[in-house]
Image (cartoon, rainbow, N blue to C red; front, side):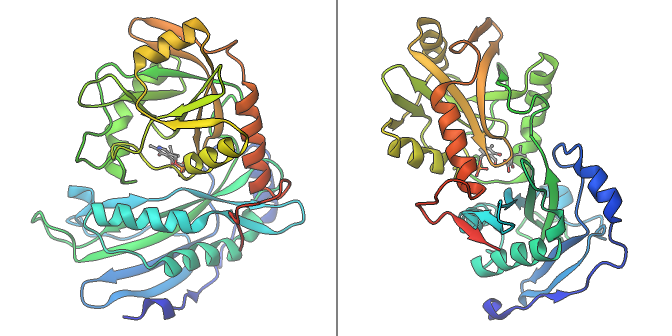
Length: 362
Ligand code: PLP
Ligand code: COI
C-alpha cells in the first residue's frame, strides 16, 4: 500500500480535560503521569500493510489475551519532545532521527517498518490537536511513539498484526532533584545487553530487564543504575535510560562507542557534535569502571554527565558501587556540562541559533 498517502481521520475528543484542571496539573509537572486528550493510532496487518490512521480520544486498547506482545514482548518505542519556543512556535528536535531509530528497532524485533513520513505525520498531527498541552517555560511535551504485536497466536514467530500508536505527556524534570547532580549505582550482578542481543534497539524488553537493577539503585539512594558490559563486566556502557560522557582535565571527552549493546542516543550524537564544535576532542572508546574510579580519584576526570531526551543533560556527582563510592570533581555541575546543557536546551527552545537544522516546526 502507498502509505505515504495515508491520511489521518481526526475525531476530536468529546471529553477533553477542563482548562482549569490542565493548568492546575501544569503547576507541578513530574515525568510521565499526566497525559493529553488524544492519541494517534495506525494499524498494520500482513495483507493490508499500514491502514486506518486515526487521531482520536486517548482510550484503552482492547487486545486479545493471546496477543503476542503479552507473551513474547514484540514491542518497541521512541522518546522525543515537543517544545514551546519563546515566540510561541511549537518545535520538535531532530524528529527524523527518532523515526529512523524506530525503524532500526523494528527490524531488530522482526516488526514492520513505519514509513518515516507516516511516523512524523502521526507525531505532528497529535502535537497539533493537543498543542495547548505543550507547557511553556522549562517543561515540554514528551511524545511516546510505540508499536506492539496484536496477533492472537501462541506460536513463536513474528506477529502478522501490529498497532502503531503515539501518546503525549506534558513533563517537567525527569529527576526529582531537578537539575541537581545525580548519584549513580554501578550494577554488580546485572547486565543490560549482550553482544548480538537487543541493546541497540529501543524495545520494551530491555527496560523490563533493567528494572531490578534500577530498583537496587533506588534502594541504595541512587537516581540511576550504570550497566557494565556483559562479556567482561569491565566496561562502562550506559545508564538505565541515558548515555554517559566523561570530561577530562586535558579537554578530551570520552564516551562509550556504539558497539551494538548500547542505545545510539540522539542526545548523545548531538552532544558529540556540539562538544567538538566547542573545541573539545571527543573520543568514542571503551572506558572501564576501574579507569573511571581512578580518574575520579586522581582528578584527571573533571566532569561526567548523563544525557537523553527525558533527562536532558544531568551532571553525575557521586558514583556508588559494591566496594564504596567516589565523587566527580566537587560533586557539582561542571563547566563544560553546564555549557553543553545550555547550548542544547537553547537550541531546542529557540534561544540559541540552530546551526545544524535540528529544530523542526510542527
Ligand atoms: N540509553 C537508553 C537506554 C535510553 O533509554 C535513552 C533514552 O531514550 C538513551 C540512552 C538516550 O537516547 P536519546 O538521547 O535518543 O533520548
Ligand atoms: C527517553 O529519554 O526518552 C527515554 O526513553 C528514557 C526513559 C527512561 C524515560
